[in-house]
Length: 139
Image (cartoon, rainbow, N blue to C red; front, top):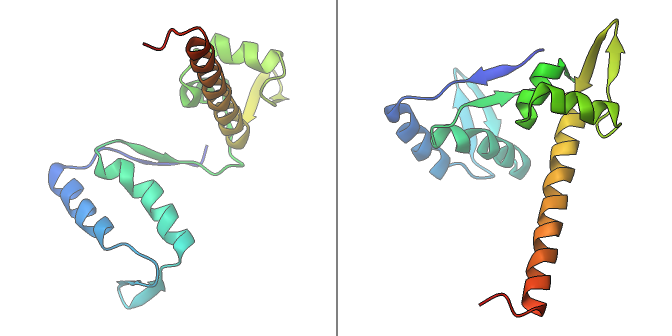
């Protein structure tokens, strides 16, 4: 797997990163060693998505969407056990392919499943709230 992992920064680095992010906006130019890059709204959004967790002291991992993961890596990304992930693969809930006896799962498929799972959770919560309000249980 071709991934970049950033571990937790020191408090001083977190503070510097927070200052940097306050000035991060479209139209500004980043300059480094004689090279410059004008920040577009899309680039600012990507940089914020990457830098905000680091500024909060959270580790960050960057993976290409086309990267293939082992079942253990996919399970870790989902925050589930490996046997649970295997069950999801066998039920066809997450696409995968076999390489010999090993299963491989693309990052984008794991993230798609995670997003769909979160959406189902939000829909169920909304439904429960609606039902509890209809029954007068919201007090």
